[in-house]
Image: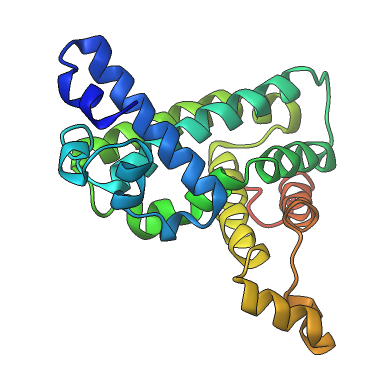
Length: 223
């Protein structure tokens, strides 16, 4: 869509189309490289708008990416529920595998999970933060029902599982995607091989250990 088309649009449908175009551009740019490197000017340029015009639709770049984080929660939540609902019974390892696979398959979401508490929630209106938190709460409640059914987890254990899964997914993704110069350093110095991280297997091991502890009377078993 060209800049002139954005300028002429006036209807509610056109406004929604503009917002979707902006989100699509941010999604594409975030998928190409770290979210932290994508500027508002980059997004505006990708959709053929001036930055000042884009600000009529989103208050900040952080609001744009916070909306994409909420979108990621919905998509990942739907995927997790679909897999968990198909299980008549499950072990901690099974659930850990489902979580690790679903999160690792969404690199942009993993990046956004790390960025959300660091900066995306800090430069938006309180209403935007509330809307985002309500989306995450809704998804946790729906998936939590399956975790109670399959593993008998308490409310606190469910929250701890999500806090661990999402914070580790975000952190591991950052570790797994260093800049090109750092990646070259890791590849050329055998002493730094431990710094090369694969998100899915490591996330699986962490969640398997956590959920096994929860279900065998280890730390966090009490409600």
